[in-house]
Image (cartoon, rainbow, N blue to C red; front, side, top):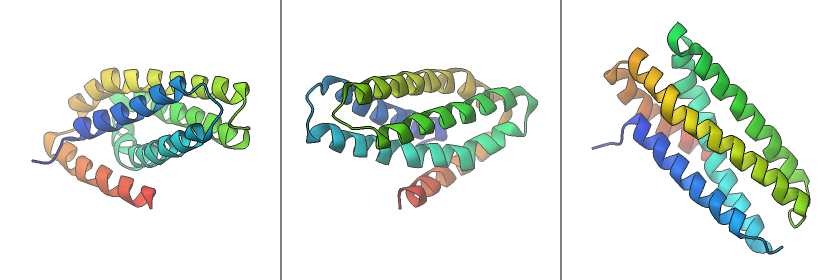
Length: 147
């Protein structure tokens, strides 16, 4: 059986968390940091794009879930802003690692809210059949965004 939307999101969150945790262990200034950052971006960007195209528009239609969806969108913008700065910063610098840590903490906060309040609101306002449809659309959009 296909995974439900919440299962897909949690799976992505776990993969991203594992990669970010691994990055924090990489205090050495080496190619591993660049490789891990590529993996993090390859996980993060398609996930955010798919959420913004599939899940958030549905939540914005309901007054009960509009605010948490708007917050999620703003948190994505924040993560993307820091990610862009990371791309431009020297990856071996301490400043890079400090900026990465800020992005990691921001993403962890976002995931905590999403898996809590946002999932709860989504279960209230979205039908089971719509959630099934959103799961397959999420997977398709994620694949498309990943290129």
